[in-house]
Length: 443
Image (cartoon, rainbow, N blue to C red):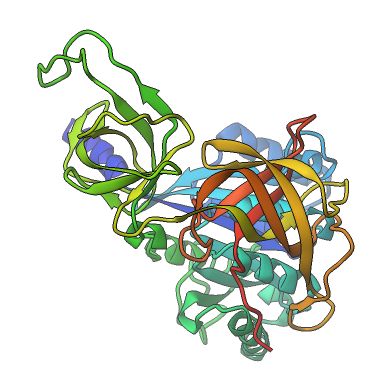
């Protein structure tokens, strides 16, 4: 019983790392993901047996671990149902949510989806090919989305005879690219791996005695998970207003006058007594209490779902934002943004769409298009403005909304600095939008 209690306690106390994988086609991403799942014993026995049978049918002497994920990828790349596959697994030290994104150029837009909530990205390159155009494209997307940490996984190190010189050359090449995109040197970790045979994925390899860094799993287990949102000013979009009702709460207080505002803390910390402003209206008040279904809290930080009670009775509805009165976002109906265009249908100036920001949706008109991110050279660069945006294009644009919105720069607070553009007739998502210019490409 004591052992069971200890195991349950360790599971509760484990933190969570959200990370994404990216890489070119045939760089071995499926095998790497399969290796992580297999070696961490995160795969059911019947799945392993199915992979072993399929591998034997293909004439292979060892299990083809890519088969653990290729079934979903085949559906995803045909555009049937899945654009990003999420894998959930854990170790005694940490739990993980892995966003597995496809590698083809035409699915770069799916990398935007998978990396949008990631705290780390694993970017694969083939040791035989080094940094290629898709590597530069994915690195630029990760920089654009402000993913704070990167792992450059140099895969298939076994196919270059575990040559340290190959690792150093690729790391130097990618280091220049990463710095040009704004990544600090200590934000990028380079790990030589062989997903096929397991070198430095979960277990340290004796075939790379010259490498003294962590294994991939070791790094994933130890990297800090506290994102920049925790230290930012408080932001919370109201998802639901809990109306007055009868009865008593857990403390025995009458609920007749109860009115709470439920949502998830998008950034910062909220404490009872804090002065907040309700946007876009602008009314100011103080936090009377912070509650959950399990009772009141002394404070709540980014990522926590809570109910906020306020000192004053203010007209607040779904879509409003509670923010720090000392450092509020700007409220505006005109914005300059960076768009990642996701749709087959091109975007032209003058288009009338819907913009979803937090829990509020409002009509929007697209104004002028600005510079487009080009991948024609060794380092991504902003090029001349296009006449229209095609699928996978990333470009600046000016927008005007029907209703004023409380906005932060995406580079400062991702949650309140991002939005979606939606097609009014179908409800389909057309673009991911980032307020401002999250990356400045250095020459």
